[in-house]
Length: 87
Image 1: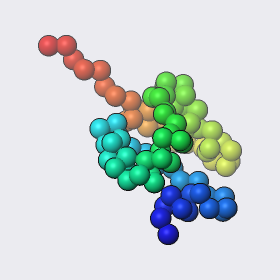
Image 2 (image 1 turned 45 degrees about the horizontal axis):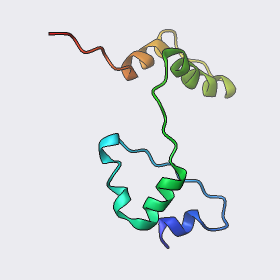
Image 3 (image 1 turned 45 degrees about the vertical axis):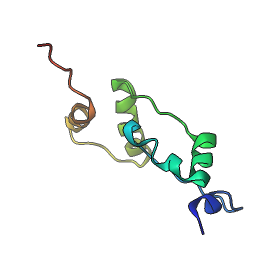
Image 4 (image 1 turned 180 degrees about the vertical axis):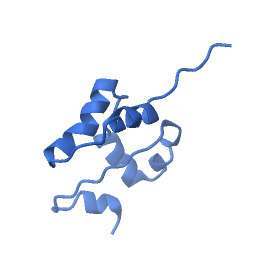
């Protein structure tokens, strides 16, 4: 069974595919998959620091968990791009 057939079946199946922008054209070479991508692509913009913090904290809070002091800012620093120095 093709992935496209599985997605279009009567089963409640959702597939999340993430791609770097420079690889976006590659799955478009497969007609069935390309049709699904064209119909269902949702671009996701970069998150702001408060949005990142919420994305990190909310699932943990909902599960009754907590982070060690300083861990959330460290995670944010690790995933936030550094500014490019001017030469």
